[in-house]
Image (cartoon, rainbow, N blue to C red):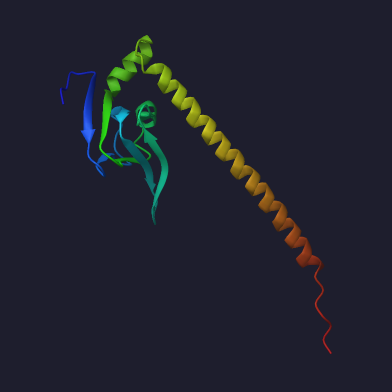
Length: 149
């Protein structure tokens, strides 16, 4: 890869790792063709959190947050991506002159909406469980033991 290039394309074979959870975020990736699975490793298993395909952008969260990658990306079929260097993206953000900014902003907005929907779903689930626990607690408190003979 040309170290001075702002963009480069790269091909990944099926099952090839694009980046690993915990890696530094040196690039964002735009999928030209193929598909990518995003997964998070927990102590006991690997959870697939997203499947991405042509036109999707991945790897931006680590780059924008200056934190290690929070998930891994693996090609699920032969995949071609455009790799954008972190410095190129940062300069474009400062100068507002990179065509990727609008789709990147749209994708980030979509991800935040999805995260908010998930949070609401789980908040509602917790409320429902709390109500059920309160009802069970009430039943237990009012339960009468049979008299012993």
